Image 1 (cartoon, rainbow, N blue to C red):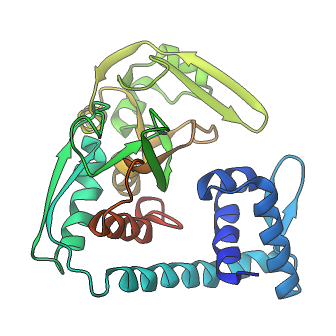
Image 2: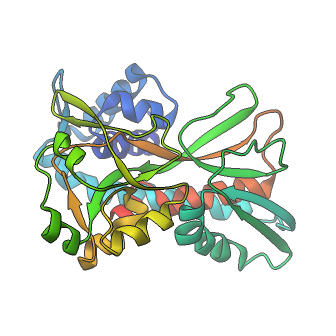
Length: 301
């Protein structure tokens, strides 16, 4: 048994509360995920997870094991990154494309810190919310929310969960009231991100219940930071992401709305051409970002 691999799988199952979701994240079948967990439990002589047909949850032992297990996995990834980069000088242009909000708030800082030990490396970060074709536009690496537009041309490596969150300023909620159900959003001013694939329809889940609401967009933009600023000004309820809204939610300038309902879970992924093996600088940057954002990204910590 590869114990480190099994530990990595356990961390993902514990975080996502699902064997199937962890398998999709790691590129494994559900059966293979289950096999690794059983082998790890057998090795430890302890049951780590409660399984049912509806959900997966941690046992008391699993809860205690998760933190040191996560730390071990993270340290192993960092060590692998050191070995990967050992003896290889990273140099030349590194063309990266990312969504505007994520690129500005998180990726720019990460790329700068990645570049510091490599003075001959010249990153070129292009932030744009348009779904540009990485191959056509000559990007070495594209960070995208969602999946691969053409699986034959591009390879994907998941970086982090991208959780949706509805939020509004205290001033707006004092004026308009707080919606208690998704249907009540139709009586509110909603701030809408125009690149959502289902248009102005917002989808929700709670337990086994699902519902969709066609909102009346009081303000629409193709940039999350624009909507974030409008929400801070009290213009309405914004459909945002935790990587964008987490700081405002912590300091109270925005308040989560309908947080007992789940919005569709997406992922930040690294895309690169499938036709060629990634260069050492692309591979090193992807490994660096994986170590930065897994198992729990800093905005969700």
